[in-house]
Image 1 (tube, one colour):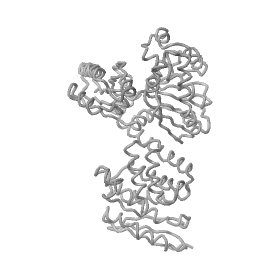
Image 2 (image 1 turned 180 degrees about the vertical axis):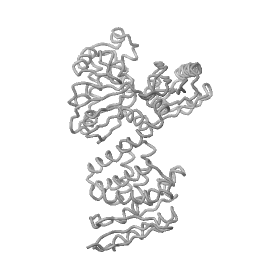
Image 3 (image 1 turned 90 degrees about the vertical axis):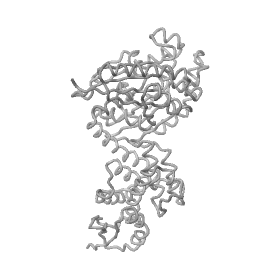
Image 4 (image 1 turned 90 degrees about the horizontal axis):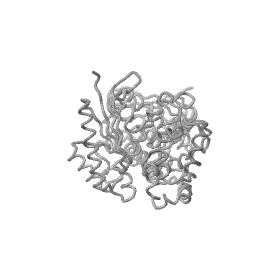
Length: 507
């Protein structure tokens, strides 16, 4: 018998159990149970999850655990998303879940949730979809959007607007249908404006995922094709026109939904009806994957998942380059510094012990280090630090964003110091990582401090206890040597290796 694995996901409007086993196509689902429970309604309305809702959630979780025991499934992941993540009584909720079920859910941040689902979806896209797509993950409390063009993610945005969050916000209007749709559309106008600015060229394909999508597919009589549901744009438009003048009670009776589901569904359809206008899509394509599916895939297909994660990290670089161009950074200078920084990183593998993830973070730091200059050159590292913490960068989660921001903060002459909150408030292992990456970035910046294309090439060699960087040029490198002597101090403190810069003349 194949070994099975399971996932219990505590989402904003449902609890889900998925049990699966490895198959040639990826994961074969052998049990799938979804139980509607709008924990997000509590969080978005009162800021706290009620103990009445918590009691019900715990009852459901214990039921899920019993199913897992029946299948002999002991390898189980537990994840929680927006409802628990944003609840004011989160610590008490998690404590009660642990005490009364024995499990400790991993409360994943918005970025990790988005990355987990999106990297799985991206692995399924065909060439045409990778060439031009607007991809939307519609959550109960958040919407993540990213644009794929020519095989790369060129932009991403995460917005705290979701179907359940909005329906809870306008709960008093829901029975006044003539007002409700208009109120929601007006409320979404600032969001629409930001999307219009973000999606500057209408993609050919519109791809969606999310909690309400299965229901929308069913209501539109969507065509099933492998792992996709295909909804003709005309069918979706007809559905929108059909329900926009109906009450949740009418929708629930017509489509056999609870009133809560009908309420959330109305809002989801309003949001999607606006988003599709940002595309030239003839169909809406839905990959019917949730956070439970993607986490289960990670658990069962670990090797494939690791490869997909590596591929997804590459989108961080393209996403960062688009941001750098937006903030008028010199791409030529970025490419020169990046090449040198990555050469140093690769030569220092035995000394830093870091991997592909950290290499991507270093490269992304190189790309974004000067974005603060659009505001002002004075203290631009500090400005960039605050900007990065509030940017959406494809492939980068919140923890990685903090690391990236800190590395950029120290990219100049300032040395990381425990007297500085930016550094001291990081966990000890993260502080070490920031210093390791900063040390390399400082050297690369020093080599290219003139911002001019001075060198025919740059070579990096590790020889004993020395890192030797050789610049091939006929021009003076006095400025670079001066900058290098200042910026090599952190490198030598972190690695215990002397860094030297040599010039070799070329004809």
